[in-house]
Length: 194
Ligand SMILES: Cc1cc2nc3c(=O)[nH]c(=O)nc-3n(C[C@H](O)[C@H](O)[C@H](O)COP(=O)(O)O)c2cc1C
Image 1 (tube, rainbow, N blue to C red):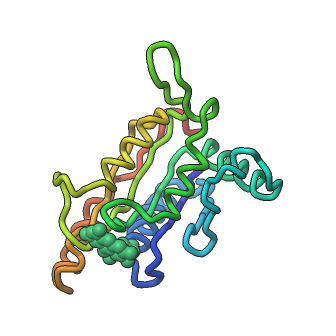
Image 2 (cartoon, rainbow, N blue to C red; image 1 turned 30 degrees about the horizontal axis):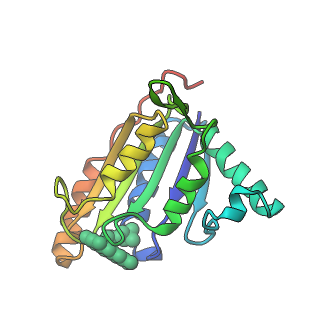
């Protein structure tokens, strides 16, 4: 079984999503000691924005890296993503990663009856952090967006571990983090897991 662990927060050691994504990945390691974990830090090593040059594969190094990003995504059984809310959505570094894994003919395709996701059978757990409180509100373009993207790729098993209102006060942050840690789902063997 393979786990891909991704972080995208720009707040380093002060990041709530980094703390939560590490806790989620750690729980999987404890439950499945043989699990193969790969880690990608999109803040420390951001991917380039998708441009016309990217689509034309003008830069061989960029195209090769994009291929590795896609392969790494396709190979993963479990994907843990630290995804803060930035400006009501996600960090642009995480969007740049999504632009490299949402590839027509590889992870989705269009048919006569509409789009079809090709990357099903994976589990995605998103460690979500936001300064304000947005659950169920029209201001949330982060979690519904991520659910939509992965659903479009055929991945319906998407869970959120959420700390929100962390900017309200230190006490709010401590309470939200304690609740988020308590809500971490228990790792379960996947049907396709070896
Ligand atoms: C650039 C930036 C933009 C942010 N935009 C929002 C926002 O639109 N709404 C919100 O509730 N919090 C916003 N925040 C607060 C973060 O969501 C909050 O700090 C959260 O903890 C981020 O997760 P992290 O600690 O893992 O980086 C923003 C923070 C940063 C640094």
